Image (tube, rainbow, N blue to C red; front, side, top):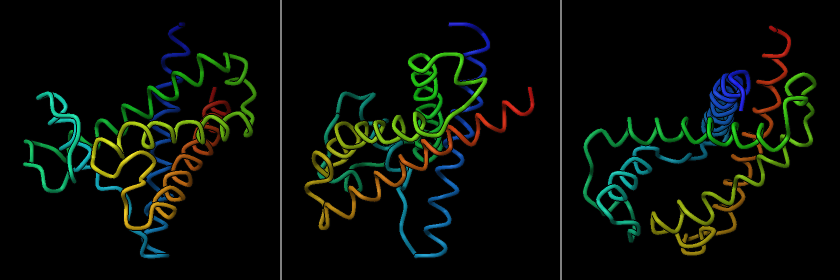
Length: 163
């Protein structure tokens, strides 16, 4: 792994995660659609550090110190790690000529993380099966991770035009 790949992964991961957050903010403003509360992600991670992995639901669990900061930090760190994984698989050539389709495919693949880890841990069950409207929750997750994939491409295009 070269320094260039690592640096690119940090920039692209932050950019793609920011793009994902801007899409979520737009959905909230236009459609009054509630997005994920990253304080609850921080609460879950705080409890994971104490050995508790599952909650029924996370909102009923005790708050942890700085849970909002912890959740948002984890959100962006996850974006960087996903970007690093993407670049490790796709290769350096994609940085020189970013293409949309692999980024979208990877973005959709990343939805496995909330379906298999975060949602069950926070009390929503596998792929949100315990939510009041699981299909809507699933669709929102897929759309969020699709926007992350588009954000990978948008950020890479912007970066490639700078260097």
